[in-house]
Length: 372
Image (cartoon, rainbow, N blue to C red; front, top):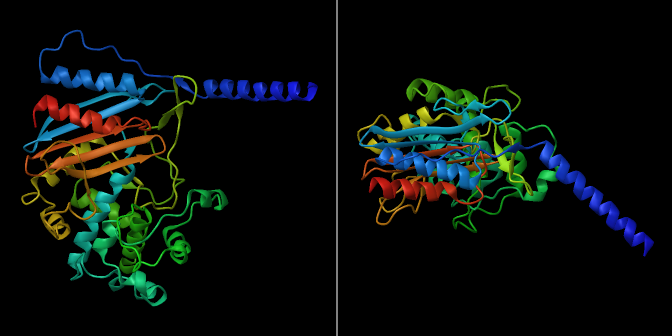
């Protein structure tokens, strides 16, 4: 009986220390005052952004809305850093996670065209070495990989516990994962996996002789004129990026949750961008057949009934052809969606983990207010 008492005391002490540590390492949640009066659509949109921050305990929120190639609405609320209280702005550099995949797809389509290829060709055309060692993977098409219909899988969650602390480079990471892959010929059903895009990033490096960072950053900055969007070549590079957060387990507070690199560079998820840059590129995507990305889009649009390769079909509103991509990793959540037929797009960025589907809920509220 005495031993049970000491066990309970020990457990209670550990729990108390956990609570104290969680409080000490966290910050009070952001609580914004709602508008006094709502007179127009701008006020309505401001109101639902404030409501979203307060209800979902977000550190910061940035939203852009594009209609007919014009910025219909843009607003940022909250903070880049809860410690420093730096305000989040449309120029704040933030991890966009899997929205990175859109940019890889767009760049790849252009690269393939320049080399007399298209996304229906097999990936062995960029890497004979891969094809000689893993012929069934080499026979996969770029389209199958872009659409996550390759049979390739991500490493299991538990494998991360046994991985070396140093972030592997792209080539080493890909070759370490290839022996673990399922047969591409055996199961081509949809299975979302970041490894599809790490493999594509490696193929671009291998064929071009240039690093993925240099390839993509040159294209982003020079061709698309996105001056604040880039991939880091090394996870240790310092840059002024917005801090990510997540809700604490017990207290109604926010705890830092920084981005972690699985591989460096990180094609599937490692892009850093700003609201202003994403508004700029979404405007071009909405214009589709008329914008600077016309040839890229046409190369990815193999089947009219499907979304463009590399883009997700997203159920936002009824009878609407919404596509784009979700992004969510560590303390960052993002959503980029657009409908070329309606010439309408929405970008949502937050430096807080989305545990309650606030991104899709907010997008639907915006669509309802603007009667899209």
